Image 1 (cartoon, one colour):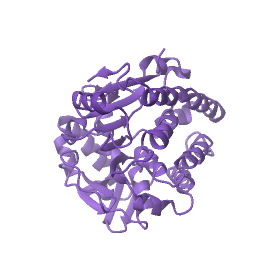
Image 2 (cartoon, rainbow, N blue to C red):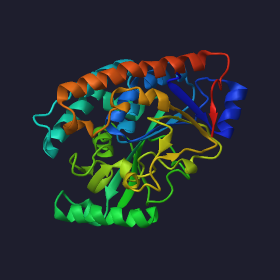
Image 3 (cartoon, rainbow, N blue to C red):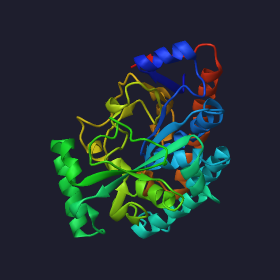
Image 4 (cartoon, rainbow, N blue to C red):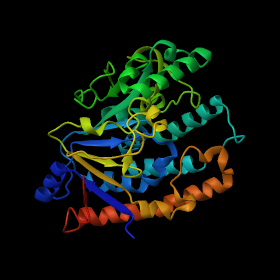
Length: 353
């Protein structure tokens, strides 16, 4: 049974056939929202940053929302493997006083996780990395969604969800996309067209808050307010707009790598609740997707990868054991990717998109 699935669009396949795998092959890297789902990708990420991208000579645009942006922050550290190791260990052992922790308690743990990930001077390394240009995606609340948690925010989120069910085009009335990006980065079009997208220069003094905002799920984490250089208001999880990103909008003349949790994507967070938009198969000429195969996922405990619903549903000790087992099994993804990029056939076993 193959653990890793390689899914490749037409343009990306042609590049791979002509050039093979090398450090400067890809133009962009995608990191999706997904909370604990990242645990299945951590070992694979280590191979991407330490082997595939080692020795890179030109800039790489890394777009991320929520945990996707956190993973890229780990990649930007001087020793990314060490950063991943300490973050993974902290994430596996996070502890809460009850099965239903409060928003302040969850936020406190999230702050600790981010501090652990970044370590000393980590903010500077994210902002000033020599070639990894971070694009940290957040959603700035408009109207009622720019409020502190309360009844008006509940109403605002409900209105956004109802409007989105009719058309994704209604969401800009409720949220503005704000991207905190390395100062040398250019706006990514058409990927980030619409939603009144605003780019803010990423600097050492706003990296931490930008990363926290990118993962601030309303009524799970506390929102982040008044970020340096970005103005006032509530900044929320970037996945509200860009949960797994709209892959039909990737820049035409580029190749993008997407390590993902499975072969299907959901564009925005509210779309998760709409069967006709959720879990869509990916098709994009510019895309190289590497993901666990369905067979691999089915043989994991509970037949799935870790997710946020595990909190409260699974006793803490059982959850940690289960998560550690998934992480151990995920080494197979890393090993197979290592063999692929160092092997003689760049498109070995590829599924064409």
